[in-house]
Image 1 (tube, rainbow, N blue to C red):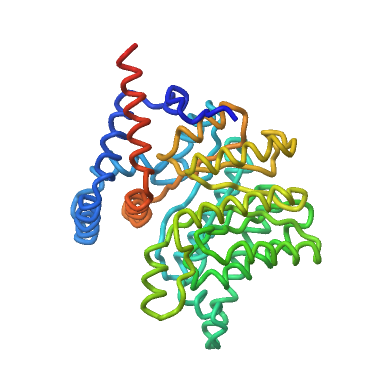
Image 2 (image 1 turned 60 degrees about the vertical axis):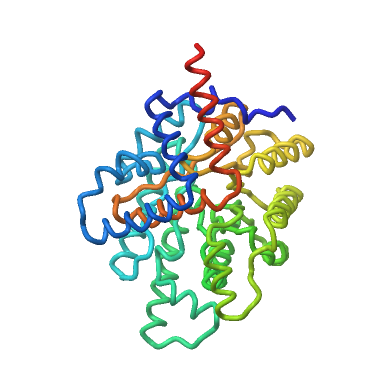
Length: 389
């Protein structure tokens, strides 16, 4: 397999020299763990104190990692990426809401992105987070089979209706729908709900996609059981595979509450778990569609090799590669240039509301060994290449 991910000319073809310099500067900052911690604390304080920092945030970290403050803002970015064959997934990245009106607003925004996707080839998926449609604590109680008060039962009924409404709309408009994964202690309830949606809307093909976070050692067993259920009941499985985004929270909670951590014992074990899941899904691609959400070059190469070995076309609609906007352009744009299906998650929302997402991005980059240094190396290579012209 030809190593295509070192081609920085393709990777950064859409970036101006100024944008390239800004990206280099940002990843230099992110590479400094103490600086990230201090910056996070200062930013949180500034936002809560309503200090006038939005302009600075917008011009730096926001514009690098986000498509805009609303869905229309994103369209110029969507169109620009698509000139290079890279698709977009509009991700309304407002987190941590608790009110019914806010859940209804997230529902309306998701329905709007489904409509956007129906109208544009450049947007092949819609997406939402389970906690965008209901309270975290409610999922937690459901997952632990605690009894709900009558008010909570009515509240859970509204969560189910929101799920059903977006899945119904996605099915009607033939738009694949990604449902993100979250913390393990609320995920069981979300898994059950998403499986019900697959039963209902994945009769002909995968429309509804759940997410497996493969840093959890129990997820392969879950995938195999879901496969048995899908085979017995006659529905297709859609699955986004990722490594995971809540490792520190998971380990801290497990230690505090005295149960075994759900996280794999090492990075190597997580990588192996991820690759085993990819193999399993490709072995059953007649029943499964995969969205391989990864910034890992080796995992991307392995999927490419598997597709070649199994005679699966690069443009097979059941297989997509995905990365986050602002990261791993060397994977996204080189895959697209080589003919594979590739999509970038494109977060959007008001600057203040998207800050929790941006802070998590910065913290993840500092915790993933080699990720930031790889970004810096590639950016430096491209800067030098351009100067050498």
